Length: 355
Image 1: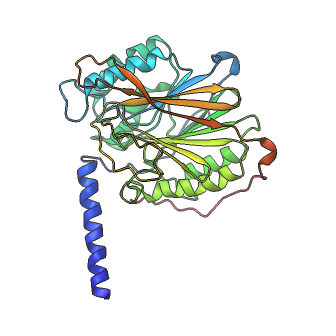
Image 2: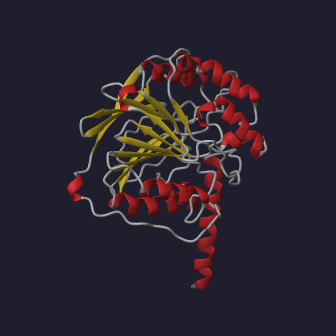
Image 3: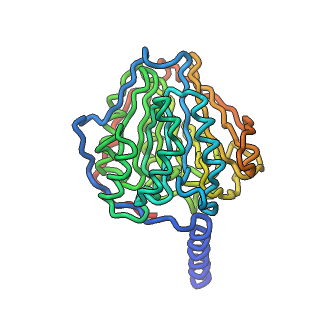
């Protein structure tokens, strides 16, 4: 009996390893954590209410893999460019990018393609807030990778994780899932301090990162690092005056979950090679259409955030331009009188990041 169980366990491990190597091929290893350095120790970007539109609009999406347009296996350049233009047409107050902007973070040419294809974002002076994906650390040493990323995004120079105060009602936290999010790590301690001192005016907390804490086929996709984050956020969200939304990328598709009072989104349809997913019952998005090149548009309307998943329909067209809203949902602000007191969740240091 024990022999049979051991064999079953070995087979399961082999199947999991094979599935991951096929489903997300060519993923570079995670980079080790390096402390952030910045003249702004709070690692906070603040945008005043007076600088925002009414209604406030922001967009989230990622996994573009900007590279030479001749490369059509790793990415769909037509879909990638169409998404850049469509996002710009929304004129959002903020654009949160869930990582994997370049195909190879060590390639100056890939970042140059990003600068050229996304020049409209610069022309419109869009506020762009990226996170580090695993491809930002591809084909380069960590220090060189980070310098390339900071050169492309000077607004976050010196930071690997940071927060954005988008007016008084929305606070976003851009995390680095290549570094440890486990209890006691530098990044986790920073996040805990930020959430424990969150202003009472904040109604919505947006957490962006690359690797998903919740996903379809989570047994194979979700790592220990992000599972620990989800466990921590479960405790914090239950005692917070704000509603929590967590949006990741890495999986080149779209997924939506509600778990422990938190909305979890996967938005990795920015142009990279799409990935089929087997949708479980927990996924609130069950449309069978594929692929899902898309972005998510959020609009603050009174006490709620209304969101739409905007999908590119004619993705095979050399110049695609047909769009459809394939998912809609709302997140309603929590009644302040119903929220228990906050609690601390500090724990001893655990620096390891493992699958």
